[in-house]
Length: 93
Image 1 (cartoon, helix red, strand yellow):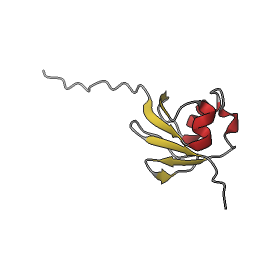
Image 2 (image 1 turned 30 degrees about the horizontal axis):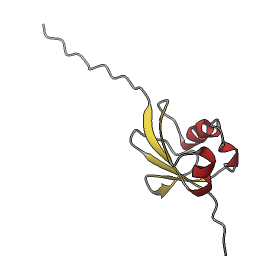
Image 3 (image 1 turned 135 degrees about the horizontal axis):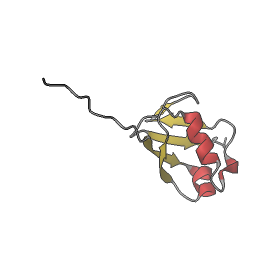
Image 4 (image 1 turned 120 degrees about the vertical axis):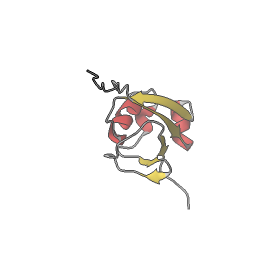
């Protein structure tokens, strides 16, 4: 008798690239970072991880976030390969 077996799938997390601009890049000492988050993570979880980095105290409570070049809310789910940009407030006149 032949038994069909399902391939085991191990979800190791969400690996993505985070881009920091202007004052955020200056404060964090880098313009780009690759991170791996737990499966099912959202923008909110990513921000919590970034806030734990030295220099991250400059981040406002809810910075402008773009995922794959489209603005995203804190509840937006993240996927492997996403590019997440944290955009500081714009000043000027």
